[in-house]
Length: 411
Image (cartoon, rainbow, N blue to C red; front, side):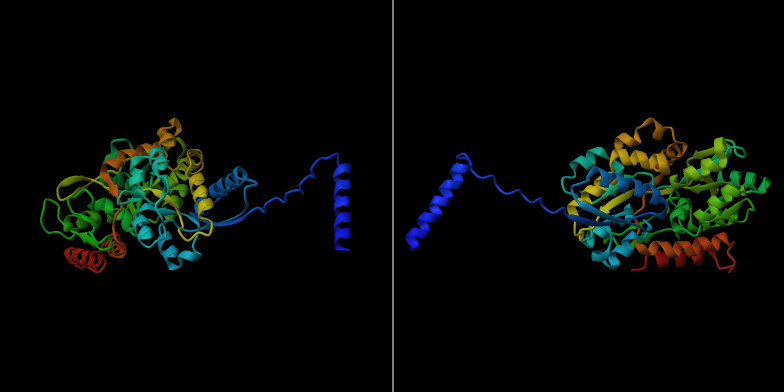
């Protein structure tokens, strides 16, 4: 029986083969591989939302069909991105914008891995931006902007090019016009301007966490009390006001502020308010200890990081590269006025013609990368707020400087 059944089956196969003309049967249709679902969260500045959404849309169009993208944008301040990330790395964004002074801490915490094949990024970016994105010569983030500094904006209807060379002269002109020159003394970032070129120093110790600071020095050609007295003299004028960035722009728009110290992120708003009278220049000098001291500034870059804990690290890296590409850095300049870190974008005629970028470049001679530990900020803000208010407690300037330095250098 078994032999007979076998013969019947063999006959059936032969008949089928003959019916097909001796050809092999076609293989069954292949089933397409399922498209991967890629969920990515992106953190960026709230004021960059429209720009980032446009960039995210173009990324998804570029890679359409290669994955099912579900990209979520969430506003997050670049200045405290590190603190939020380190609170829970695994729940943090896959791709995020942050200020360059946070790169060392993020790398040390394991949030950032070294950039794979970094040479192309190095060659495409300004050297200062590469340095800002590196720790110990290793690149950990993608350079985005090279403009995270500050300079002077002024209304040319009130000030001449000679006026803006001196802070005291500017304050005098503003007082005569019943207007204001604005600067934010509640931010230690801006307050550095008064100390940076005096020979008084601040910076990170070798541990990368604590600070050294000589801003209370009683020796040298410029003493700490000389700087403090200069700040008090400026604050006493009705032509000066300590204002936050938000209040500064509100004053520009309502006409009460005719000059102020800020950065490129406000270039568009200022040009809209002042039109052809919008001027920009390096920071002025100020009178201190019988000398004219050129105001200093902190400089820095904005960077894009890829979370080492991302569930889709390759796609996150592609997105970071897309956000920081030459094309999108040009777009960022066009829409937000921010200075590119990309060499080609930065050297373009439209960027070179920007008054704000030109002013930033002029100020760069008197700036240094922001490299201070976390205990720098609050003591300096406390001291400067006292100066802005006219030293309401009447405490000695030296005592207040000593208290500030004690806080800045605390371990």
